[in-house]
Amino acid sequence: MNFALSRVRGQKVTGFEEKTSQILVRDELRMACLEVARMLELPDWYLGAGFLRNAIWDHLHSKTVMTPLNDVDVVYFDARDTSPKTESNIEASLRRLLPDVEWEVRNQARMHARHGHQPYSSTTEGIARWIEVPTCVGVRLESDQSFTFTAPFGLEENWSLMVRVNPYNPRPEIFQQRIVEKRWLKLWPKLQILT
Image (tube, rainbow, N blue to C red; front, side):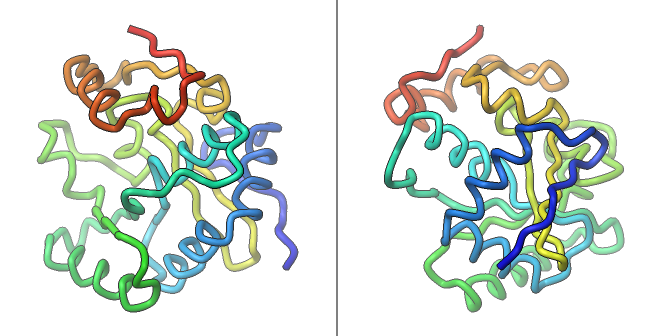
């Protein structure tokens, strides 16, 4: 299967997108997740957060076996239907298509209310408000087999192994709590936590 040059929403393509694309192409599970998510044709969709972040961190730690994913975050933007029931139905569809994956689906058109923000205008704007900078990333597989990335802070943040709190949503207590609960320094000891 041939994969076209990657695109980045709102940013110029850099070598980081090419390197990240190579990691994804070699990962059978992540490619299967991308292909199944694409089948649903959700508006402005991405697989985000740990799906992409962890793959880069595993690569930079020279892991031969990828760190298991707790879940796969599917994010999309549909202001016409913000019902949580719709998200549950999408999760059920994804489970039928790829049952060994724990899917979590969230419509970013409703997530602003949960976090006390002004309404978001796109999936990328929702992703840009996640707790730590390296988590603010997403990828989708297009019909021409190219990848489209969204990375409000740029993918170079992930490749730097530095982890900092999101300056647009500074919540240092939750930031510190997530690092401990998710055992990031145990899984990826080369990470540098910036406080």
